[in-house]
Length: 212
Image (tube, rainbow, N blue to C red; front, side):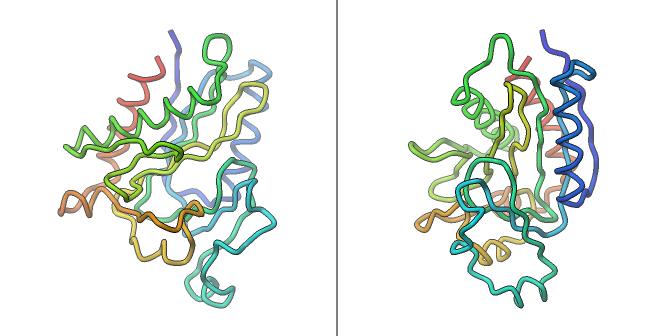
């Protein structure tokens, strides 16, 4: 049985969240802390995964447009392509040691997808996987994205679940480098306002069901 501490951090700048994750990963490797699940929101930011850290072709907006919109750009150590984070999106960063029984990168990503699928289901939305892609999808639209980093089997980065995110913000980029798929949010799918706190509760329940 795993004991996972949940930390609901509110709005955290992306740079601050990176530093926090680095600290917690080192503490987890050293056995100074137990497993953690960080839940938070970011101010508007575009992040580049390791595949695209030197390639900004999937950022559609100009530097001037990004500055006018108050959107920062960060290169990051997670897997995946380009992603947008911002208000109305629930971000989850699990800092967990996959040893001894979960040392399988593909399984870990599938488990995170299962968390996202269960979260959607708790609101009556049927999300699925798409072969060859990551994340949770409703039809051809991505509801939740995944990008992870694993070092000595300790995880960081994680998932981003669109709750009431202004979807036009994704027009700034080619989300995850995928040109023929769209993006959706829980609020759009339900046709009603959804509070982030409701989805945080759902995330905690689903994460514990999958990982404990």
